[in-house]
Length: 156
Image 1 (cartoon, rainbow, N blue to C red):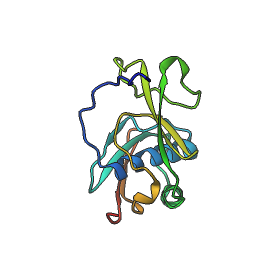
Image 2: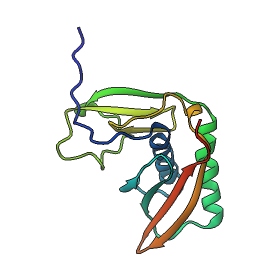
Image 3: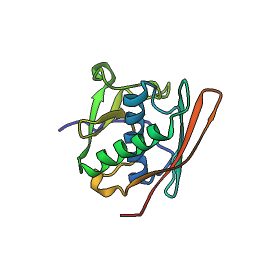
Image 4: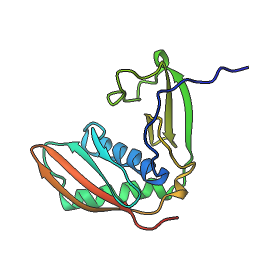
């Protein structure tokens, strides 16, 4: 009988479509700008925000491209899957920089098709078809940090 994985306690109940969108946005930012995943995020049902350390603020054209790419992944209707791995066997493409110091030996990896993989204990959709269209609603630039605020246009 397989042993049940022991994970850290999770103290927040995310809205799965928005939380999954955060993962897609993070991968899009990494791919487009070569930055790290957001170090500061506030993810809520109605609107959310993420902070990215960038050398300059994205142009309006780049912001439109971020929206387009995030929505392209959402519209591709890919499965969101979970796997459990021992910390000693983490795939090379998994960023562990946000992992807490006291993270368990077993990690839960969340994959969004082949687009993104991230260690995460939060709630996610099962397929991106469950996510409404993504829209950037505002952003600002301050001391090397680009804060982007976004929402999902309707609730599916």
